[in-house]
Length: 144
Image 1 (cartoon, rainbow, N blue to C red):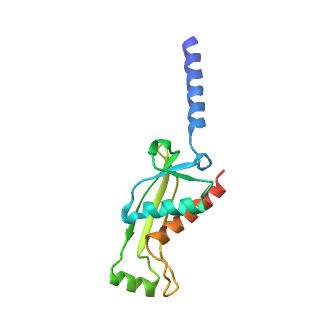
Image 2 (image 1 turned 180 degrees about the vertical axis):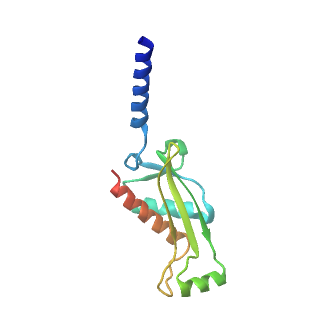
Image 3 (image 1 turned 135 degrees about the vertical axis):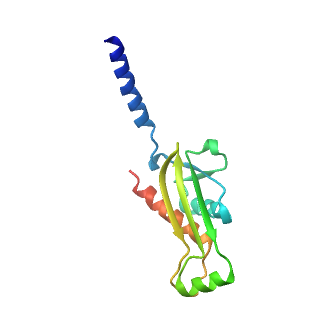
């Protein structure tokens, strides 16, 4: 009987400690950004440092971070892609990122650089990073 009580208490304490350690968006203050194609990581670093100043800090050492941002991106910079995107509003660059802490995806998003205005200048990975960080900012503001 004593061993059953010890087992029960151990299970309860294990469940409590697991729930207490699960990360949330509100817990994240320092992020490490992994290397991404087309320098998307550099654009994300610049956007986070500008738009989320005081809320998120980008650290260069993974061990100092509360979470990591992982992702990928594409950029079709050929003449054909540029001409087609100007007239159709399609993407020349896309990106998808995830904010990960303790092997848990806390948030993720994907964006493109589409613009329906003909002749719009701001295109490519920089525009994708701007949109992704805007999405992240909204998620952080709505985090409970």
